[in-house]
Image 1 (tube, helix red, strand yellow):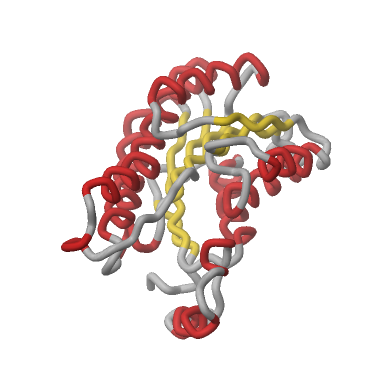
Image 2 (cartoon, rainbow, N blue to C red):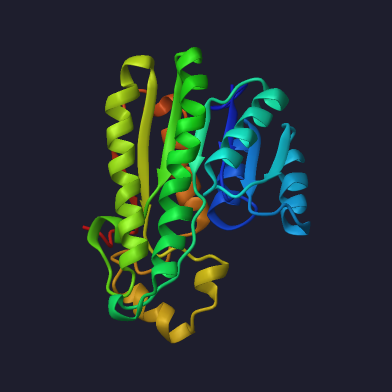
Length: 248
């Protein structure tokens, strides 16, 4: 039997990158997939088709994850379409980097709203559902910079540190109802975003990583699978670093 057979996973920001890799991995283990992105364009439609080709039900939803009311409406629609939500992966996120003295209020607010408030929105919306089911796994996608900080990324680091605090608090709040909450802190992961960096910059990054390579979205997806499945049935309130030893 597959690890997630018969379960429904909701993955935010999953049209591409790490979110898509998680959706694909979960689908390969039998989960039906509901995913969100800001818009479901040709990329989102292609992801929907690719996930469904693995033999599961899949549907993409256009959603501004930072909008509280919109999030609740999307979760209600997912429940109408799928009937249950067993797993929530809070993956939606953006960066707007800059040194603090040059950072605008808009840069700060945008990153906090998309990265951190969106996680609050979705947890708020799915908690009553999982409580009725008396089971569930929630995973917040944090970052190594949420653990250790990073110059020029105060807004991003703060949002990702907030994801850890949110996960730990929810683990204590929801544990008695059979709901587990954890966080993943990826390191330097090779995605479209990091692929735009020069080879020189990427090589400099690799030198800082004990495993001497950047991670792949699949590396993160494997960690998410562990935390979403019953393999981690006694793991809650934890931060799993997926960083090649960078945060050691």
